[in-house]
Length: 69
Image 1: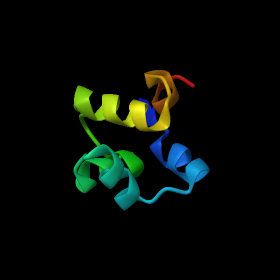
Image 2 (image 1 turned 60 degrees about the vertical axis):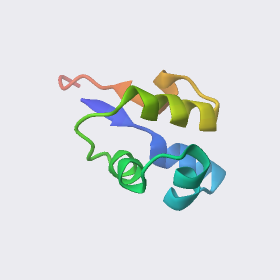
Image 3 (image 1 turned 45 degrees about the vertical axis):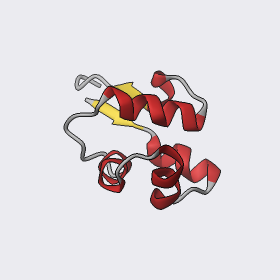
Image 4 (image 1 turned 45 degrees about the horizontal axis):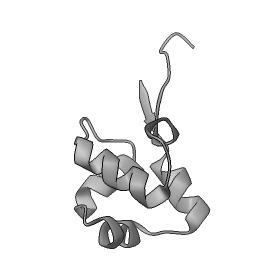
């Protein structure tokens, strides 16, 4: 399973979904799906924009968690 840490990153910076959408140019729905961890696929441009905004690595945004744990 892939876990998305967008909600944590946004919370640390007190950003709303609309703030992230405005600052990245991403569609609000794309951000909402990642925030709620309901996205089934993510565009590379989306990951790039979010990593640039939060000045983080992909591993800080997305994490693989084994189903065995």
